Image 1: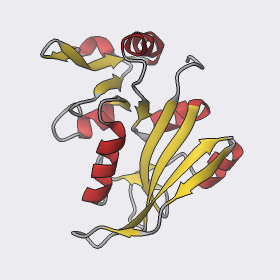
Image 2: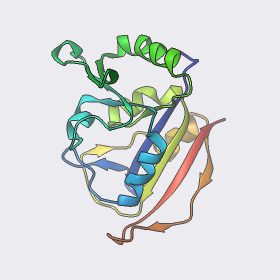
Image 3: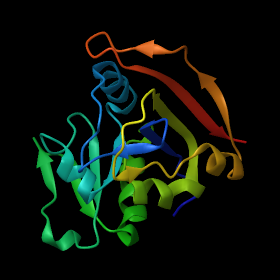
Image 4: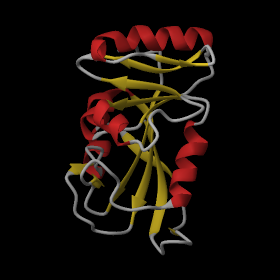
Length: 182
């Protein structure tokens, strides 16, 4: 992986570090989905194939979607009105793909959006982590590898913590925390 590329993670987890249950989020917070959209719009999102498969409408609009898979040859890269926006690649091809994107669009930020293995793989490369901490203890089957202890060991510090927020529709409390590498 290139050191010149800045990677950011964006992740939501609860008090027991759950991020998913049966390939979906175990809570629904429209305000957090809007926050995610605002951060990632017009940028690059990188995800694993299972995360991509969990998206209700395929690739995220107005973003360059990169889906990591061990078998990219089984998928077709898609373009929209001659602007490419969905790429399948493996880890070996990722650096080349990102270099091409950054040559054309140097201002684009690169966000890792899941799942657990993908978050963990990129841990040494993050410059920033955007965490939504959801105030519940719902059990799940996918966990956040970016725990407080792991982040501290990797040299991250919290540079921003929001006040506790509450979803208007679902009465769910949450807060935003931004971590940056020292």
